[in-house]
Length: 85
Image 1 (cartoon, rainbow, N blue to C red):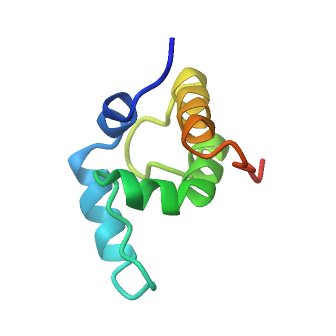
Image 2: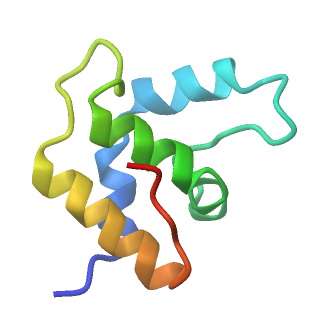
């Protein structure tokens, strides 16, 4: 089954979205985890953070299946995707 954006978008809680908007306020582009283009722009960093368990902060970590879904979705959007991990 193909992983779609609505599945990935649902993995990001409102707390995740607000936290990353605050953290990234001075970055070249604000990270909006409910915006598909923004998540694709930061996909390398997001994947590295969720696969290592560093994120999300203060919430249950993503399951291995959620991490795999993110990677599958990312690669479906960008076949040249290159995870750090």
